[in-house]
Length: 89
Image 1: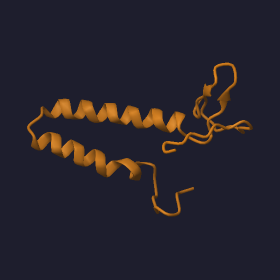
Image 2 (image 1 turned 120 degrees about the vertical axis):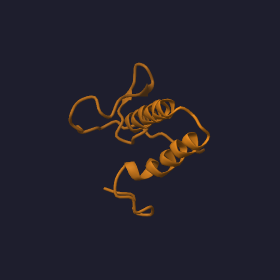
Image 3 (image 1 turned 180 degrees about the vertical axis):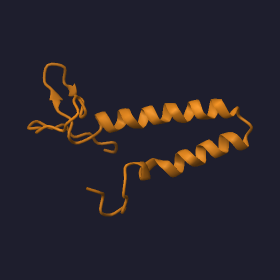
């Protein structure tokens, strides 16, 4: 499923343009190219963790009172007690 109002085809569409602009700006400001690649790799890890924990398919750990992983296995199982995360109040 894709978000209707944004008309995005893939998850990469959310982040690709801003990451590309960040990488280009670092190169223009004469950062080392390998350093810029390392920074973009860290951003990729951040996006991956966000996809894992900020999804509405996360389950809720009652004993720890925090969200669990979406991608704990290679499948998306049935979730009966979901967790909803809001970035804005």
